[in-house]
Length: 212
Image (cartoon, helix red, strand yellow):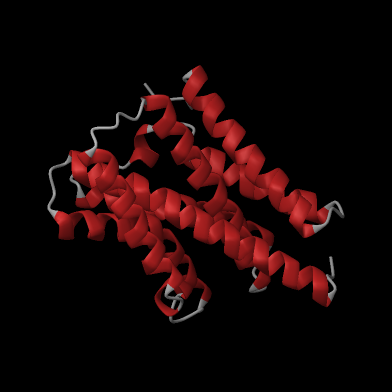
């Protein structure tokens, strides 16, 4: 579907906002994980950076968009540092975050990155299958790197409806665009679907079929 110049500019803003918002959300989550693991201030910043930007960097490298946007645009590291400061402030104030609140935060970040990754991949002219895969990579890549650095089994391998929700959201976004919906509306539908599926998986303890 061809977009006018104004629609393309509007979609670019949507992608940027989703990418920046996802960066902030995942940076907070990464910093909280580092604090709970007992890391020092530098360790907290490193984990926040990896968790929030790792997936996008991997996507941009595979797309040939080098250097990655998060390394060119100072807003990304600045948001990461701000999010880490928020997480440290919460920890020092001993503000408890319930498990459901953390799951909701994580689902929001997952949805934002799935949308941003898929839309950016489509804008680079890749096919629909690759765009959906890159949307999923953007959503789960940073979390995988975070967990590996913290010597944990990655959440994507433990939470059955995690990567699946991101992939489903990316696919729904692409289908909505192919059905003729405006890209901005398709992004909202795809992101909302990812968020709803992830939260349903958390609340309903959904599991994919297992062997044995």
